[in-house]
Image (tube, rainbow, N blue to C red; front, side):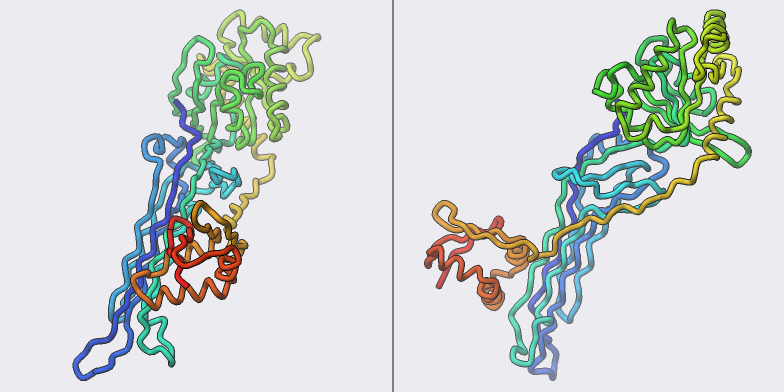
Length: 421
């Protein structure tokens, strides 16, 4: 099975907690606060590995979490940051948000990186909260959790030249002759159940990448056969070699079936340069078909440009490759676009919502959820600071308008707080 689509979950590491600490040294009776900050959590980063060509490594492991940050310590020591987690993907991987389907990045270049889940911020220690009016603050913060995201990965093979045609047209055999690839080959429809990549040597220094795309059938663009799953792999190729089976009874129809599917699928596949070739010229029937459909006066203009080849004997195969390379050289150099940044709203950008829920009240606010997670509920000063936040944002007034009273439960994210006047 060719693994070219998978959904994974990624989570950045949690930030370390800040600490409440005071300087304790001989001859220093009133040492000030020296509680250090927690370290940030590690990021989850996708990185392109040019040696990969499938997403098979995700078949077993689909959950990825970076390291948490370490807690702060006294003497103003900041906790160590969590290690970033680097997850390797093949070139040509399209990264989408698993829920919104928005494209987060298109990873094409070797070693290209994309941060998909940022680590949480480290909590601040009490040294940060010292002011002239509060020189001994008993306040510190918890680290925030890392971002959690469901990510859909879709692989679109990157190749210079793509081989297309109906099943059993000889694509896999040609790929094995022109490159060092060893695809499975057999004399029956749908021999190739997965795309194959191969590297062909043009001269001593130049190589090109060829992709054998599984055979198309009529209706492939609508999901029939294997076409719907694999047509997308042609999107990355720049030149197409269209192979016709020399033993077919109707090369004209075979050609048109493939063209119709390319048009129906869209994405400009039918606009790509194509070189047409008829295979199996080592067989008498194929030679007769070539003369009848490609060299006779009644042949269509498209088929008159058809090249005769035989992968079994090597006839015409290098000439076909060189012509494809010539077409490739005539195309403008593709511009590599930088992936669009992942857009995330800053805390507090979204308005809050306060509503009754069960026997209590629910407050929905991304900003407040983050603050409730960072608040050290074991420290009275920290709890009081959170109460001031509710008052400044108007949430307290809204709760009171809805009738909150002492003893009621207020739900914020996964937290349940008891309201006290």
